[in-house]
Image 1 (tube, rainbow, N blue to C red):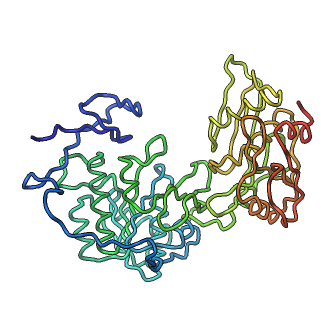
Image 2: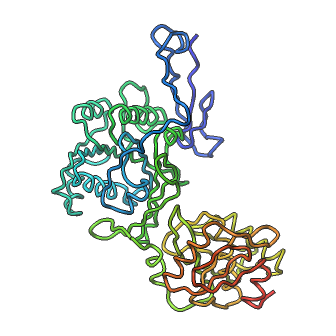
Length: 453
């Protein structure tokens, strides 16, 4: 008996037995689409009903050589990839519209091609003439990159089989159309089918394939989450249009560390890599001002110093406003609650604004103490010393907990001219040459640093 068709949300991938106008999982309207069920084959039998080939099995002690890597010469890109491009790998790159994904990948493709790799760039969103215009603006017109504009997946796979490239760029996966799938381009079924075919081609022909993916308004790559499971590496290209900084972040990498970042600066001639992002993020920091704290963080394997800015002001409204850019709003609410419950510092009747300078996004809890210091500095109108960095995790009891890689954080701060650090009392960091001010709990920070409470 034939299976009834399933209905899948194109935004979040939630499935339903019947169509409805609104997805209950993500709340979006008109995103639920019909998805044809998988066929059981010409004979109507399942795969388990027929005999196949035996799988080759090994044990855990089997040693294999590490995969060879091709470097682009763009150190920030090579760092995020885990040391270079691995053959037969499938990479998914997502980012907001206009953030610079196509520019980054065109520069990367030209860099790999100049190092001897045979590279193909397939655009499904722009005509070949438009891509060539961008290449001329970036000074890449002479790079040995083969260019094509097509959306039919069958024709693209035939071209890849014929050309046998070492690197293929598909821009973007949402524009690909498989003629054997009865669905519109960009639908959940089409995206999943196209990603599967391209990933299988990469493994079968030892070709590295980079897929460009659109993102939803929540910042997630559009389409089913199974696409992120199919590929080997998932990269997000982040940044604010008002800032010139762009951050390439690895959120999944089977061939290298996850959460590694590469920092770029958008210029008139394209993206320029930033070898020392800490110095760049702090370059426009002037004299010490209330509400400013420098946080020594870790992004992947790299220590990065960023400035946290806070503003506390009386509100004319009955409900105070809490606005956060670059950090978790729920964690800000927790820090405010701990300050009031454990330290007696109320924020009722006050608007609170928090911003991470430079367009950075911080996710680690080690920023708790720096956020609390910036809030206290803004509320008490007392600036922290210019040579001071702060890091530490705050518990709900108000105690300060140590964080990982404290020594690397302090070495990076010392290299940039900082001499004092406010850290949790149990932090283990010696030989950095910095003066440490260990604190047991948040109440001690309030009393000794700001004289409040």
